[in-house]
Every structure is written in structure tokens, then in C-alpha cells.
Image (cartoon, rainbow, N blue to C red):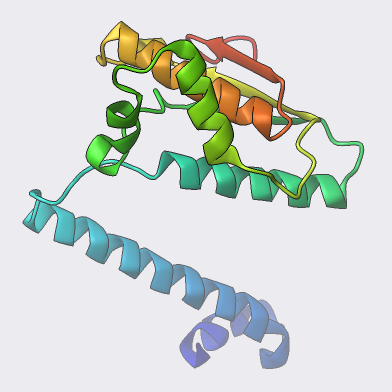
Length: 168
């Protein structure tokens, strides 16, 4: 950090004034190194399961939106999800949904959503590009129904699907 402060010092600011931006730069560099290491580990061992934590990503995004709403109560919030919402580590959700009718899918989503503390009723959700997936249509329909019921359970009733981001 001293080296960064020294480099930034050429801008005629005192070293104390540069400690905060230098800390941010160092933290960003550290996070970049961690991300690079993860990427290198994946390339070296592609046998590890691919996928993402869809539910975790949705929940983290909603927490961020709740924070934004608290800071700016008049904000209009839209969560745009560019995903088929299927690609989870080990594809747990599609397996859980297999053979369940639409009522069962919704019941499962409601149970998984549980009760939330935040008010998400003012959040709009747009799911983009899900139908561009190579996943079979029945699975996409089930996953879409699951997430719509999940979002409805936590108070989000304005859920739409678009093929692309035109109009945004």
C-alpha cells in the first residue's frame, strides 16, 4: 500500500488522504488474484462440477435491492435475471421437479421460499433469454413455474420473461 500511496502522491495530495483509495486498489488487486486462482484451478481440473448457485444469486441480489430501497425509498427496482435458472451445481432443482405436476412444483417453491423478512412487493423481475437455453422445454417450463411461485411467495408478483433486453 505504501508503494501505491507513493505513486498516487504525484497528484499533490498528502499521503494520509491517499490511504483510503490505496486500500481500495489493494483490495481489488487481492480479489482479482483470488478470482484468477479459482479460474486457473478450474482450467487445471475441469472435472469439478460446473454450475451456479441460482438460489443464492437470486437471494443475494434481492438483499442488495432491499438495501437500495432502504437508501432510496422512491426507487423503482427491477431485478434482471439473464439465465435459464436451470444450471445449478449438480442440477438439483431439475431432479427435484422431475415427475411433479404444476401444483406440486408451486408447492415446492413456496416451501423453499419460506417466510422472508424484507418487503419485495415493489420489485419487478425480468427473466431474460431463458428460452434460448438448450434445456428441454418441459424442464424450462417447470423451472420457470418454480421460480415464479418462489418469487410470488416472497412478495414479487410482477415477473415477466423476455427473449432479449430490447426495450431496456
